[in-house]
Image 1 (tube, helix red, strand yellow):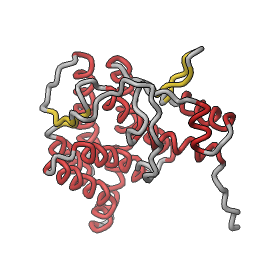
Image 2 (cartoon, rainbow, N blue to C red):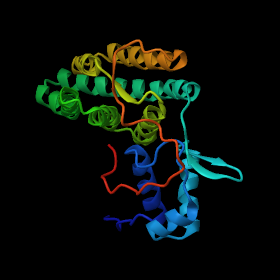
Image 3 (cartoon, rainbow, N blue to C red):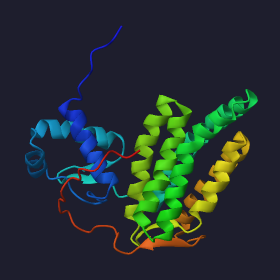
Image 4 (cartoon, rainbow, N blue to C red):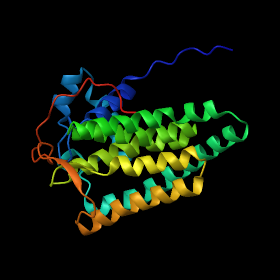
Length: 255
């Protein structure tokens, strides 16, 4: 039977707006969420804003400080390192499922189906390549996160997709929290090309190994504070130092 369409609640919409504002950098790590001002700007009640914010507190995107209010979470090196361990488990499972799907399609002689399955990843890789060539660091980062989100979506596991929805935002927050400036690896296209090749071959073990190497390398860099790989940074995208409220973006949702 056809089910009635469920309209998103006000709280759902507020949560999405805040998630997008954090993802796109309109709200940066350390920024406060002034309840009166934000609820008035969004045209909602303060109670609706509070409920939406509590969802983000639960996911680690906002931090509540008693007596001071709500702030966008700042990801220190230790927190990011622990987070990457969690991210690793989610992404390795997604990569395994995708590789197995490709292997099954190839076993059935469906070469076109295997290529089509991975085409969103290939498109994101080309976006990264073009952005780095144009020195558009934030766009390279957007395309990189899109690729990781798509990996979970291609796996078609709703729990992995839900986890990745938050993971990509936390990853972006970690990048914005770096006082040296927002940056991406200069060899990003090489690492993703290797991952895509493993997936195209249906090699789940190789895909997991590549993700493990890349993400553990990132965790090691965060723990030590030293860059093992050349990074391309945008000096204009530094960690904010204010509690100033910035307008919420009307851009499309991430992923």
